[in-house]
Length: 155
Image (tube, rainbow, N blue to C red; front, side):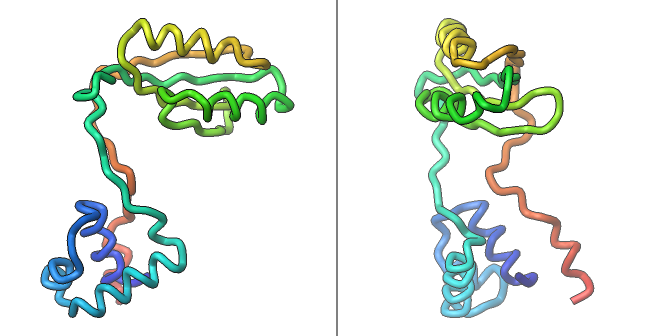
């Protein structure tokens, strides 16, 4: 990946629907070169998918929380992960190192639905401990955080 690939990715991160002509004009490449570079990044797996970001609050899901979970034993990991995948209000699940085993990102409708979800999580076999953090506001949220362009200064 070079500086031009990085600039193409930055354009796509800002707006995945931007067309190759617009990207080319912005970074000084022909449309065909932009298309070929994008295809190459897709083939090698650097670009994994294109997505739509939905305003969940406008859909009635105004509560975001993070729940840390510690399991009694690693033998419960597989079952825990299966149960987590089944719940639509669990937006993310990360297996972690440190004091907790899993970090869950929750996006739900109300404190009542958060309470029900917490009860659900605590009822999963092997769940030994949870800690819930309620999000008051989000300062920064990026789906794809690209490294700085500074790494290309020497080229």
